[in-house]
Length: 236
Image (cartoon, rainbow, N blue to C red; front, side):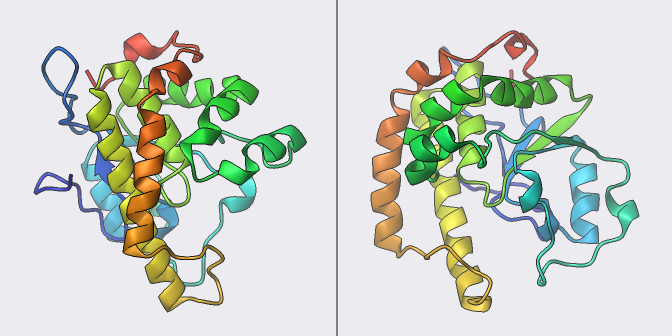
């Protein structure tokens, strides 16, 4: 999926522009409007300038508060590097919720958790879409790895925009590949800080196949979303 048009913001990982994806009935999504990535603490001073130059006005953080912290290997950046960017803190889940953990805990890296996540926290998910719709400029949506929660929001956004299901599946698959390779690299460089077991290349592809099959029934999940703000999505 990655090509010469893929953004390159210094320090960013698992970064994609959601533009250029085929729409049902013809045409493609607009470029430079919505981006997805992994955690923004990896951005350098230059990376934040790159983000701003791309027109991003709002960074939408899907993580819970306890996850929003720097790691020892993150670059040191000036506060002024992101002073002109607005941040919307919109977690999609509540790990303190017993029902959520019992239901979704075993499937947090799998689209099988998406329907229950949406059922349990519809207002949280809707808040993310409102933040996208209300942003005065382009937006960046991210979680920690840019794979699971970002995958949930991205797939829903693309579905509601009218993107072909095969393209939604491929966007998910490529982000899963990149995130998994990043986990493997972090495990190699910082084994004492990495808690997720890295997958082999073959394991990654097996997991992608299983997960994209679940995404083929995405309309059943998206049908539960409050879409009052969908007409304002900027991917068209």
